[in-house]
Image 1: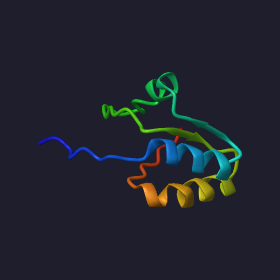
Image 2: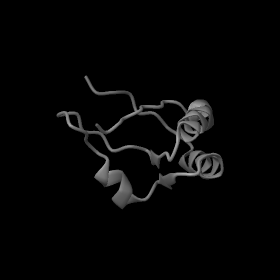
Image 3: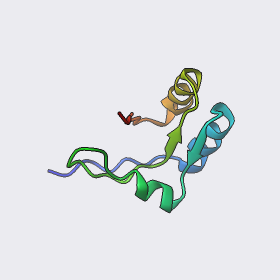
Length: 77
């Protein structure tokens, strides 16, 4: 069974994250392709990518993304 398609205001999300986060915010196809998979077999093209610089950036990214759900965090080891 396929996931239901979720429509997100990507321009609004990108603008909100760019203001809220000091780290990098990427919504371009190249950045999104780089983060299509993690260390698992799970592959899904993200709507956008946030590379936070601090704990405060993580909190700001979650708060800014909240109205645009879904939010799926990924991390590196």
